[in-house]
Image (cartoon, rainbow, N blue to C red):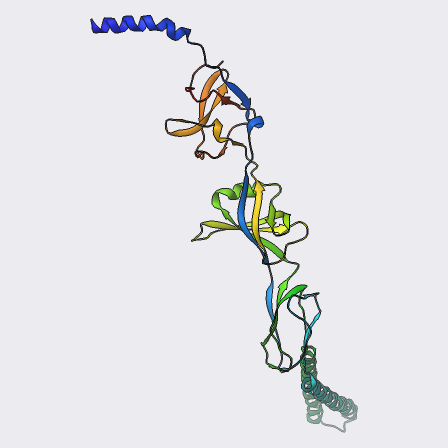
Length: 331
């Protein structure tokens, strides 16, 4: 009897169910409703060269030609050391070379005369061999003296310390009158031309940064255009971020400047008001030929734009989606 009543009730309700109209919804192509959220990451402008320029020889510091904050070009004078001792050493080496060359010349002349006498039978083979050996020894002495002169000349050149690259003077370390030893720092220079931006990027944002068309550094002085150079594959153990290096396309910011790298995500995203939850999953309804199809978005979060892995022509239900069911006919 109970089963009969159930069947009769179902038959009675069937016309009502068939008469229920399809829900009215509003749909729009993904390309029209998609948004491209802006991403950002903390960043700092860094110089590729930050060098302590040191003395290479011993000497008393006579001149410090730079001050903190000064900009210098490549080859500009930084400091000058007292060079008199090294100049005297160069003169001694030059004199030693001249004496060695004179002895060598005399030995070569005697060797030529000895060969003439040997041809006439007045000099033995042993005597001629001795003169050949003497010429070889004196030639080696002249070569050694030449090397000593070159070394002394290099020491004289090192009395003047010059900038190895275009730079900004960050610290003036040398003091006039001090005795500098080899390796004594004289100035700290920051490369003013080879400048990059170091950004700490979340792992989930790396792909969007690599695809971004116009990243920018936003800091003191406004926004400056950048181009991505590389992303380090190593993950920071504390912050769980990856380091991205970017280069300015125009005028660079000052080394040490802090700011943020910003870019617009090129992947289409859907606004939070289009998302619905079905079976513990967040997603959107798509109009599939007049039928509602629920499409889950794996990375979607409540209240945040969600990345949409759908073709640009997909018809997204943008109004009336809250009461829809998967497979329901649409109007």
